[in-house]
Length: 155
Image 1: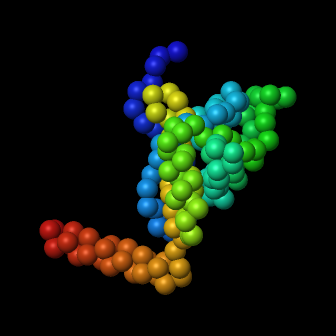
Image 2: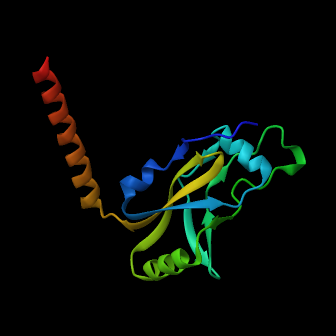
C-alpha cells in the first residue's frame, strides 16, 4: 500500500467551538484496533459527545463513538469504549495541572489522518456562559453581513 501524505480531516466537533473557549490545542495519537481504524477511514466517527480525562497519568477519551466496521464481525469493539490518547509525559503533566484549575476540560476537536495515521486534536477548553454564546453568534452574524456588503460592493 502506498504511503499517504498530507492531512485528511475525518470528523470535526463543531459543537465544542460553540460551547467552549478553546485555549490550547494538542495533537495526539489514539490507541485503536484494526477494525476501528478501518471504520474511521470510512468517516464513521462522532465526536459530539466526547470528552477526555486524565486517569493514573494517562489521557483517555470518553464518549467518542466509532461505529462498528461492517466486515469486522467478532473483531468489532464496543463503539463507546474508552480510548487511550498518546501524549508525551510532560504534556500530560501540563494538561493535568491545567485541568485541576477550575473550569477547564479536555475536549476532542478533530479526528484526521496524518501521513496514514489516525490523529486526534485535543483542546484545553473553558466553558462558555449563555451570554458568551450570544456574543459569539452576534459577532458571526455581523462578520457575515460585512463580507456580504464587501462582495456586493465589488460587483
